[in-house]
Length: 282
Image 1 (cartoon, rainbow, N blue to C red):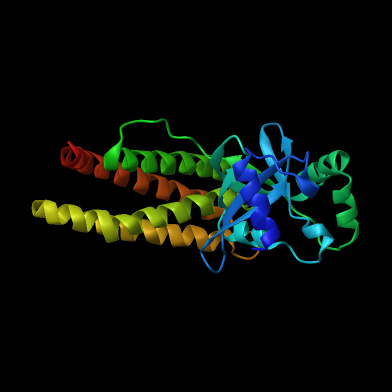
Image 2: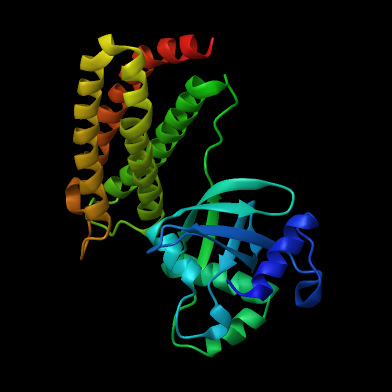
């Protein structure tokens, strides 16, 4: 990161989103993406506009012929963090496509004509990205039990979004292109699910098995379920970037199977683990 960007970010965070210099009076946000190759967080200050209540950012790179790094990052890892100066929240980054992109870009240019000049400098179609806030899980109990319920609630909510988008596609004929909205939400769900299960397998479950050796068989069954779900997840991710029509006519069926497997898995985990976790913290 350049010293200039570091200074802007520091000033932004110190002054509730207000900065001086060339950005004085501009509405900025901080976007934190995960490096597509490094896996490390990267934060950039960006100007933004709103489509209703949803922030829009433009991958203009001042009219360069290559997309900025943060755009490549969010295509690989759609789950991002947004800071506006008054709040910080998680979002799924969804580039607009086709006619919708053209419509939003026209709105952007009307508000900020400089973006039209940037587009005039390059043959690259400059992306417009919507930062769609993820579902907020209501505050509940604290501790590890509360964290488990929070993550499970997030996964259920995101999977419901993916099911709805996949169902819309199926009603349109099933062989239509997947679309960036479905791709980005499905990737965000799959990546979070993978991280959650790996964390359980490597950390939480071995610790609990040491405390409760009588639960060894339960953890073996849960590990086997993780393997089944991981296979379904890999199939979904492969389908998202497949050539042609992507997932083909069976994508909605894959999502429905994932939903059945995951819902029953989460229910079993909660029934067995929540009493144990609450007892440990009590």
